[in-house]
Image (cartoon, rainbow, N blue to C red; front, side, top):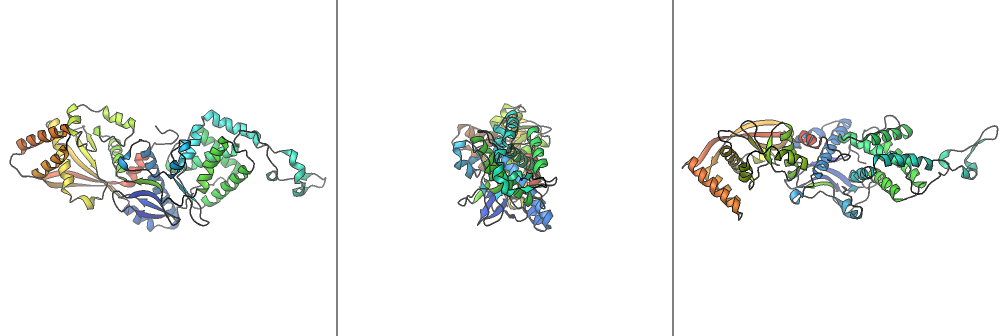
Length: 471
C-alpha cells in the first residue's frame, strides 16, 4: 500500500530520464514526465485531502498508461520497463513490476506485484474460481473436536452451557483447498484497484468482492480513501494472518496468499532504486499521441506502429491506399500520416515546446514530409502538426522559414548505406531542385503547434485496457 498524502512528486529532468516510482532512502518518489510541470505546481498548493485525491489520480493514470503500453509487446527501442520481481520469479513465467517497502513502521509501497494478483485471478477459469470458494466453505467449518481444549477461554451461562469464541477454535482443513475468504480477499483488492484505474472486473470477481465486504468490512471501507485506507488495510492484514494460521500451504493457496500479502505488505528490495516505471518515456508519449489522433477521428493511413497494439496497427493498415506512400515514407517514418481531406502529418515531440520551438530541424523535417505528401496526393495542402506535452491543451499557428540547403542536408543524412534511401534522396533532390529552382529559402511555411494536456492524453490512452481483458 502507499500513502498518497505523503508521496513526494518530482519532474523528470530530461528526455531519457526515468519516469515512474523511485525509492530514495526508503522514501517513495513519483517522477512525472515532461508536461506535468503545471500539474505539480497545482498539487503542491492543495489542502491535504484534495492533494491526496489528486496525487492518487496522477499516480493511477501514469501507472495504467505504462501498463497499457506494456501490452504492445514492443522492444521499446532500448527503453526498459523496470521489472525487478520478474527477474526474481522467472521460474513462474510471470511479468511483474516491483514491490518496495518503506523504512520503519510506515506502510509498504506496493503496486508492483499487481501482475501477480491479475495472474492468480486470470489463471483460474471463472467456474474454477467459484469452485474454489464453494469447496473452501468446508475448510472454514469449526473443528468442534477441539472444543474441550478451550474451556478455559469459555464464558458459562447460568445453566452451565459453555460459550467459546469461534476465533479460538481450529478449522477443519482438507488438502489442496484454498480458503474461500482468501479468494474473496484477492477479489476485493482487485476490485478496489480496478475502480481506481477505470478497469472492468469480471462479474465473478465483482460478486466475490462484494461478498467479502459484506462479511468482513464496513460499508464505507476503502483501500484508497484518505480517511479509511489505513483501517481497511489493517483489517485485511489481520484477517490474512488468521487465514494463514489455519491453512495448508499448497501451491494454489500460496499463489493467492502471496498475491494478497505482497499487495498489503510489500517485499523488501533494498538494492533497487526504481520501483516501477520506464527509462525513456518518449516512446509512450508517441504511442499516446497516435492513439489520440485516431480518437479524434483522423483516418490514419501510415504511422510508426512499433509501439501500438496489433489491432491498432491492422486498423491503420486497412486505410492504406497508396503504395507510393509507404515507399516514400518508410525510411523517414513520420509518427502519423492521415488522408482525410487534404491530409496531414503529425510528429510527437517528447520535450517542452518552449525548449524546442527555435529548433529549425523540427520544421525542416516536417516540411519534407508534407512536401512528399503533396507530390503523392497532387493538389492537396496537408496540415503540419507538431504535438508537445503540456499541462493543458493549447494550439498555436506558426510560420517558419525553411532553407533549401537544410532540406537537402536532412535528406542526405537519411540516405546512409541503404539503397532505397539513396534512391529516395536522389529523387527528392531532383524534384525539389525542379520545383524550387534557385530559391535558397521558403519563407512563411505554416505549422500548427499543439500542446496537448499530457495527463488527459495518457488517461485516454489507457482507457479501456483491463488486465482481465488485455486484448
